[in-house]
Image (spheres, rainbow over the protein chains, first blue to last red):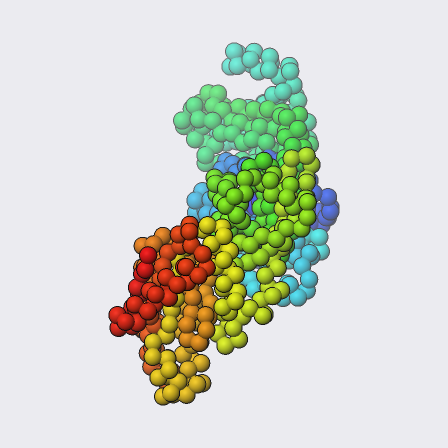
Length: 158
Length: 386
């Protein structure tokens, strides 16, 4: 079975851990608990007959005072960059995260999640125009979470 | 290996470190008993170590380099394993063996996690409050002694400072804009406490209110009230201020002893335009002229219709040479701007510079004399009079 390391990267409190919990355990907790260091979860999936085990690194969120250690990024086949759709500064920060990640893993694949879509009104959601690799997600309402991971897995495997 | 074993036994006895010995093929050779609490199982000899350490997947090649370079060390910090936080390092032992060392840092990691949680929640709260205050219509700032501790975006935009840090570099930047004689924010606060205060900044009037926050911080709120009377002060044809309001602003500038340039501008041969093309075309010329000037002056400058085809332009905080250059440029722009049906028109500019002794009449008279000279000099030019 193929094993692939993927990371969830983004600023603090954008919902990285919640996306993983929703995808791996199908659970959600309203309470915000800061992640420190790294927690690794595993998830097996089959893409077009190809079995794969995703090793999902839940990386501590970046803060203005603490950068993500490069040692976490090494060896990753893919990444999900997560922003809080309600906090523009977290969206603006995505490009810098991508640049850093690709400088270490130039051939890796990635997708982007604008998370916490449940906090937007239906009208606000409609007004967002998102390009192909950006997903509007909600860990709370299980919106596009599976799709997000599967898209990245396909990008990496096929 | 014997020495290594003794050292390992010593450090393992403190239950801070645990280890797994592995060979070149990432197979388990041996492990310390305590490792089970991190891995939730006891690795057996010959097993694939990657089953227990998924952290290494993706980095196998880098880890193999340990056997090649010998002194190379691979480290991962703050890894959460089975409810513990550990630092994991792999180090060369001999040609066939490397040691994976797990350093239990749970105690310090949990403390760090609590601190980080507190810090992140505070940052979020700060950002939220900042957004709330930034979205107020009023200009808001908090002063402590002579230092501005906080200001909303509207305040920074209004006084033309890009950030709070820049503002702090020159704390007097703002209150000299209110009035030159203001000594301190404390003095302003005391004055506001004794009654409602209005301040004029440039051409805008603000109602200023102050509240004491804790014992030393003073919250100032400036609410713009100019717009209440704007309707009466605006010339309906051109959309710029009228003479009466311009006089008030000019008097205010003179009172505050601000230095500025004052230009009186008159459209050349305007009567001929009216006679040839009619009054509607004349109106079009006036509107077009105003739009050209407005497009090329700053927010701080003050432009008004003085009457008929005569206009006044006050260039605030502009040195004499810059004022001359600016007016020369405006004169050129007017002359180059084509107006439908009428073609090109020109304007004459007479200007002067404020002095501490100036009063309303004296400065206007000098500007008027300069304009007269510009007309005599053949029009479509800028003349300065001391």
